[in-house]
Amino acid sequence: MFSKRTDWKLTPNRFTEVQRELHATGRKVLDLTISNPTRAGLPYEVEPILNSLSNREAMDYDPQPKGLVSAREAVAAYYREQHREFEIDPAALILTTSTSEGYSYVFRLLCNPNDEVLVPKPSYPLFEFLADLQDVTLVPYPLLYDHGWQIDFPSLSRAVNPRTRAVVVVHPNNPTGSYVGADQRTQLNSFCREHGRALIVDEVFLDYPHDGAPRPSFVFNRDVLTFTLSGVSKISALPQMKLAWVAVSGPPPVVTAALDRLEVVADTYLSISAPIQLAAPTLLGQRKNIQPLLLDRVRMNLVELDRQLAQQKASQRLQVEGGWYAVLRVPVTRSDEDLAIDLLRQASVLVHPGHFYDFPRDGYLIISLLTQPREFGEAAGRILEFLNNG
Image 1 (cartoon, rainbow, N blue to C red):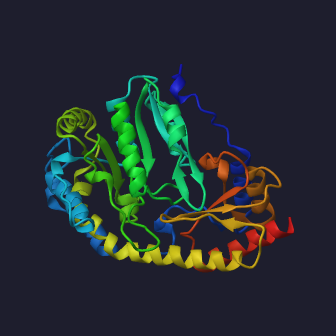
Image 2 (cartoon, rainbow, N blue to C red):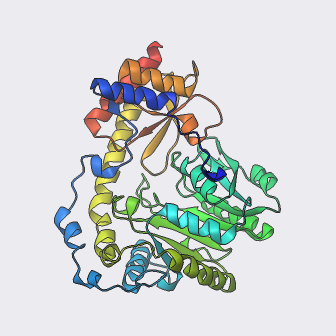
Image 3 (tube, rainbow, N blue to C red):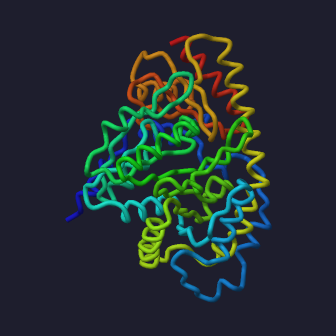
């Protein structure tokens, strides 16, 4: 009765079952997996946000497939403020409700059934579900760690074949927090140009460099056909306000063809609501309040984590440049899933095992840096105590 594309294993895994079991007992668990900034104890400017959703113009239905011009101009202004030396044409933007929907549009644009897209490993696990729903096959290419994360270009070259349609990069990667440097960007452009493939760039965490030095966006990449995805979920820490976009750049003739086709895709769904589009200037403006608070939180927790790590030798934190997560390399005494379950049962700390993010081997834990500092420090202490005694 159901399609093969939804033939997922829907039974809870052991890790989820243990979480439910402990939740049912009412035991307090220190959560180092938090990804929802609205539940991280940060102060939002509530009234301006809510008032922005009460625009009377929302009573008029103006179905513009790419999104309202005023909303796209607000996105273009965001890029202009962040990268003053460049301009982006609002006509090169397609508004969507989420980056997930943006991926779906781009996959549909580029891929026939069973065509392939190259994706980084480790990375965010959502790609698998998006690909299944679009009848796309994912082919991983590794990120290598050696005093920082690097794209393994020889493996990337071995992975490409006639069915390959695009390369996905995450800038910065989730969860490794590694940006695509200038040299890697040049190599990516050369690779895509040589093989005639598109580049899909996820930049949702672009604005969170831990050193405070802004990183260049791929929205201005002119060398090859490039689809850059982002949205207010991370930029303004407002995941409940469903406003995202796809920016198209590259050689003008192919950009024009891509935008014409994407406009038809967007016109088919017309998914984004008028109140959210009209609120776009305010929602994007909220980044100026919330981003400094989030970066302070992330940096504070990193300092505390490093302080505790310096007092032991069994575990270490891998280098991270941006985003909201950190990767711990830990002794391999059991599978990462077993370790995460034991930490939950015995230390009441919730972390993600590395295999959730497609780490190729055991010995990695992923922790969120959004957790409130007092709770974060206590949880980090429990983890290291458990590892050093186990």
